[in-house]
Image (cartoon, rainbow, N blue to C red; front, side, top):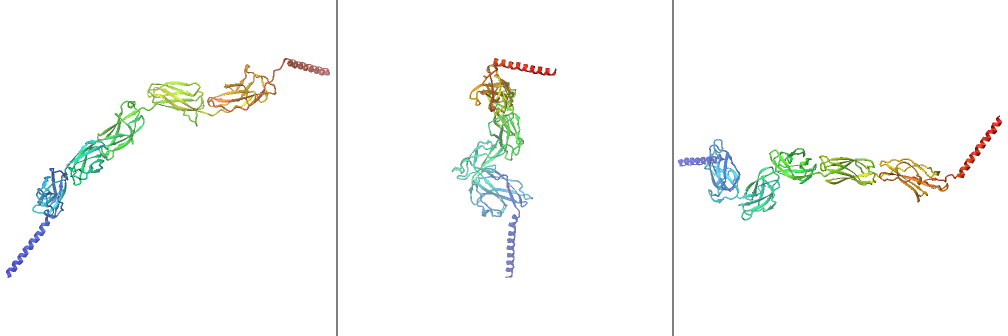
Length: 552
């Protein structure tokens, strides 16, 4: 009985010892759970994956499994994972690292677990357990992808439309397109695979640097086939033709990351605005150029405007350089508020005419058309001086006629009338001879002055007896054939005068002045005059003798 008690105690102790041993053995592997790594995190069936690991227990061995079933560290393999494929046994060195990576070919089926399962696209896992143990010590995710896509075209500039065709994807699943792992919009076509796992859609290449970029098409199961697209640099001008000295906006894309940009037209580098152009982190830039004056650019075939970056990327766009239209300017410039005048020296300057061509300059609006001929120099420029002729107030054309056509500019003639003259001779109511002399004060005007003289039979000048126009001086004496008939002291003549300048601006008339023309003396009257003179002389002599006799 006593022996039985002792035996029972020993047995109980042994059992407790075994339980304690088992309790501490299992967690001993969990102390260092370690980390699994893959050289790629996605691939297709048949691809080779390199599995590596570190931070495991030193000098141990690990089993590697491949499964679609999801489990966590410390889960038992047989409890959580029903189907899997053994990836192999790996050895861990004294530092806890894999002695060598383990190569594993993605299988078509999982056959090593309780259940068998065909490998399809989606998320799978690599699990690691210590040898002769079923607890999961580490895991890493892997995406099995199937299908393929084709790009048309496979290269182009930013903004290009690219067609993506896919096949061997999961049927009936939504498609997401990514460009360098950034989602982009499907512009047209399919967004869901058909019953055969195929689709066709189009996308627009987003802003990106020059070189190779990856386009992927992912379905909801994890398939993510990709293809490479090569972005090429491109430039765009806001106009296809421009005149010399005209601005052109330029933009570029698909160049190198944050690179300096230089612009050339044909073989010549030209200035830009801003002075220094740089691409952004997407390889794009914007700026403007001004077409320089080089005659070799003008006319003919289009010139090449080219953008270059520091990585030897370049792109060009065509620009037709147009000649500046021929034109003329007048100096001094005139206007209604600052008009010109008759006799003014006017400088006519022409630019952008055909070099060496003959140019006829005409001032239109004078009584006779005034012209002068000059020749354009080797740059197509000329300068000539005109003296403005007598012409009416208002707008006149100065025209340059050449093989380049007829080009005009406007000259404004002054319209201010000259002052009213002041009459001097004959004075009002004075007697004047038949060949009367008329005198008035000079007036001045920038366009020069002539005078118009009228003699009338009445103060209203309803009857004009004489009119003299174009008088350049401020006086006039009637010619013999213009003599006025004597009218006596009771019937005066009337006269007036006005000033007219070279632009035909007229002053008002002077106030009418009156004067008389009396008949000339007759012969009898002359004899009477001499008789009275003789009588006067005799009376004088008689008085003289009488006075002299008294004195003596």
